[in-house]
Image (cartoon, rainbow, N blue to C red; front, side):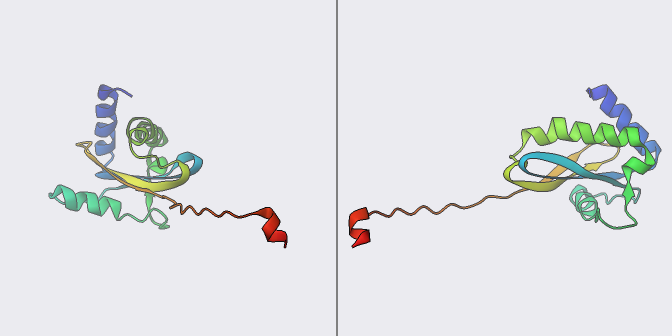
Length: 138
């Protein structure tokens, strides 16, 4: 998606009354995926950090949450694809090994975003032991 198409998408979302979007993702092993794309129509706080916090606080598993797919499946797909290809591929590895999870919060109509990315890291402790197989059997 180029810049002009993204601007058109943001305008369409604003026309639908959308003020913020939360894209939730998760991954591990060697794959990751967008899990949810939800939105709000609430008036956003003028303080940008507070607005991002409000979007990030949207509980995506709430039965009353608004899924963008239900409002406009095409726009939902466009946002999910753009986020995965243009934003999430350029950050810390959240899809391999122990993986990770997070959320991309987007302010509408400005298109400003903030990524909350959590990665899982396994610590490794190494030990070395030596001896003689013959002495072990005596």
